[in-house]
Image 1 (cartoon, rainbow, N blue to C red):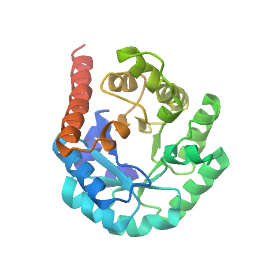
Image 2: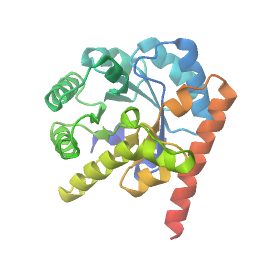
Image 3: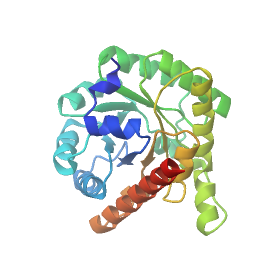
Length: 258
């Protein structure tokens, strides 16, 4: 029995169907009003998982408001136990995007150390780890393999903040997503070569245009952050999440038929 089987049934099904939609409110977003709006929009819009900052009070708020499973993100493993007690279903090392503007980067060894410590503290809780996009693609793939060997259950990619699209419209959206898509391809290929059946969440810089691409190149699901959390109106958030849900479901339906 794997730790993933301890997750809520709805979340297990979205992983099995490779249709997981995660909304990310932000590792450093401790604003309860913002988290409440994002949580409500995520639940009403059809998201499967909500990723929030690692704070017990925010977890209780998010669980109550969204009515969907909650993941907490941090780079301080000692913060995870209280968040799990408050109702978090998944703990995650990352996301790292918010640290880069300040010149803070994470090495492979540091990420591994954080994963080891998190697994030691909470041996039975599902652990997700973001692979830093600042590493070369081959190093990202190797780190992902090492993380799985250390007991990590889910791998997440990133890269949207490093992308500077120069084209308008659809082409620009593809350019924006290219770093995280490339990471997903590298990691999913490494897992396939080593017979690892581990969920890969493609996150950062995605849109309704690029979500189908993420699934087609090996992702189990997608993580959406700024496309939702940068909005201020709740109705706009709900509409955006619904649009992302539709893009994901439409692609899955089309791929099943064909």
